[in-house]
Length: 365
Picture 1: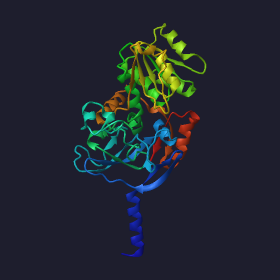
Picture 2 (picture 1 turned 180 degrees about the horizontal axis):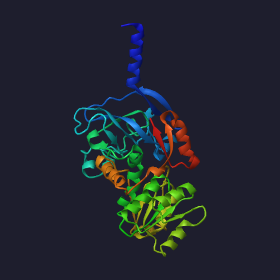
Picture 3 (picture 1 turned 135 degrees about the vertical axis):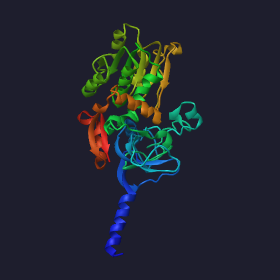
Picture 4 (picture 1 turned 60 degrees about the vertical axis):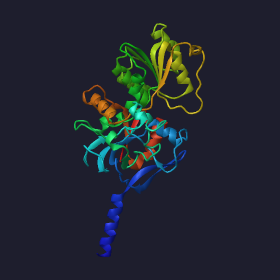
């Protein structure tokens, strides 16, 4: 073999065995690196990522508010094409287009068998991508427990129609599910970021009679109405607790959804509940969170406070895709910006600063 041919072969081998990925170095520090493409072991799969996004949780990681180990590839919202299958995976082929949830349960442990998919293997154990194993802001992704987590995408659905189902839609809709929202219930949703917007859509899907959203950003206010809010209150211009009590004729709401993760929104959500109502908390809290005595009725108001970590697994993803396929749910308007993986640092800046009316950014490896 000539020296020239050998050099070409080496270059080709390097191209097909490495990938670009966004690596977390420490608080405030991320960067693109060239790293090896993962190889699947038994029960695993590798997908070529065709579309992913940046999540608010990624910002918490970047800011040092949620600790992960340096050197980790972050991101947890993948759509892709099966690149390689490990032993023991049946019913799938290389080339299949798949959605993978942010939560990847094993389906076999006590938590999974008890229906607590997100707590697979222990507290928060179902959330692996970008938390305990390498994540999706990369050209390729290793999927654990692939048999339980590869959800085939119907041919008639585009990547953009399903990418938000893996995390924010599953999480947002779960707020109404965890609260056991009933047909005719009144609902208040505090904050209309991506999760809050999906919570608004979920309340509508579950049959709420009145959905009151709380948001000050004009772009998100309009999107909130598009997702199903009947009224949007601007907390910078009015006392939203008093306004919500007025809208519910002094009764309070049946369900309050907290979708931001701050002390103020938590307290307001609790303050607008009727006796016996449910506070469904989705926000990721950092620092200390306290329960105020008065709106909590000193613990005697029969209130319920429930929390939810994004439900995962392929059956959850299939059900959500069916909502999209049959026209019940359309989240594509939330994808307001698009970036190539090479520009992901710019995408993080736009998303973090909420520039140019951004709601969600699409990252295209």
